[in-house]
Image (cartoon, rainbow, N blue to C red):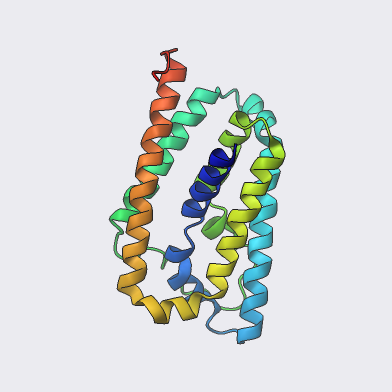
Length: 201
């Protein structure tokens, strides 16, 4: 139980990608006063947490409405995670800079969604809600991951000065490697379920 909880927290934290989001966050919040930046980070993380928790409860309904099977969701979720992991390991030019030109105070978009609660995080929560019988455990994992994400983003400018762009990029690539392994495991599990392959010990 504790191992599964920790694994869920780590997976969600990698998907939230706080280190990779630091350059964009600093750019978006640069026009604001320091105190206001902290309030925006707290608010946007709260919105993202609420959205992720909502997905815990609407998972079954959404799957039924869309007529999706759990193996299909697991395979597609693994593919999405794999693509994101590849982007983290081999970032393209301008990665995380698409919304940097916005002016004014960001509200929900693009920080809460999709920077924090992106499609991969939402899909992962939806999938995990089908696999995890203890709903409160999943909600706890979401809250812990969001708390860690919030603390990192609150210290964004200090971390940027401490590690610099090369250091942040190196850590994001390391998280991408971990996510690649998780994505492949999710794909294997989904394929086994879809084709009724008995799991090996």
